[in-house]
Amino acid sequence: MDFAKKLKVSPGKRVRLKHCDPGETFGYAKDDETRRLTEKAVARMDALQALLYAENKRALLIILQGMDAAGKDGTIRHVMSGVNPQGCRVTSFKVPSHEESEHDFLWRAHLAVPQRGEIGIFNRSYYEDVLVVRVHQLVPEKVWRKRFDQINMFEELLAENNITVLKFFLHISKDEQKKRLQERLKDPQHQWKLAPNDFGERKFWDDYVRAYDEALSRCSTDQTPWYIVPADHKWLRNLAISRIIAQTLEGFHMKYPKPSFDFSHYKIK
Ligand code: ADP
Image: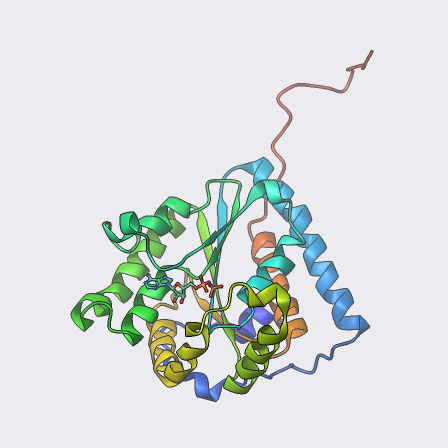
């Protein structure tokens, strides 16, 4: 299946997340065949990343957004399993530091944009500035509302500089979130970083849905579309995302540069 085509938000289309099924499987099952397809996509990513690095002409930026516990960290672990860490950089966007908040909202993101030959992954991103910032009214509406156009212009700038931006919204249901948060409460690997506030954001679920509906509608463009990934099933999420990344890298039609020296008669003594 062509996941990119299926999950892409058509530019100009008004997104209503409540009409997108987070438990969709598109006829796939959690079985050996799905595992094989996912592994194949991950292996393709590995080979293509080596080419991206060698060619050194362009970069790929992968943006992951989603409600708490949507699977951003799990996706990164999975995507990273398929690439050489030397050519990949992950940046997590938290509440802005004092220095960051002294700049415009795109400043910290621009600093973290991958350089040519690299894959960059954003765990959250400047989209937080039209999501959490909107839900909690951290700046006036007239400020965050202008940001949709500013984001589109920023992404256009990146695209024109050979930086392809892939934006994935990991779509989970409220019930699945509850299940995952309950699991975290019991899991020592997670307990240490839990704060009471992590569960408080659930109260704002509908506000976040409204904010996401608008962000995904306003900022899905031909050059940098959004993909809405059904994410209640982690295996489907991993399959869809690795296939879209591999397909995108393949679409670059990259070639290894010609060797700078003729090694055909070269002997290693
Ligand atoms: P995560 O949930 O991503 O694993 P944290 O628990 O540290 O990591 O959460 C990061 C927090 O930072 C989130 O609540 C997110 O909404 C918040 N955040 C990110 N960017 C901004 C921003 N620009 N303004 C305010 N809060 C932000």
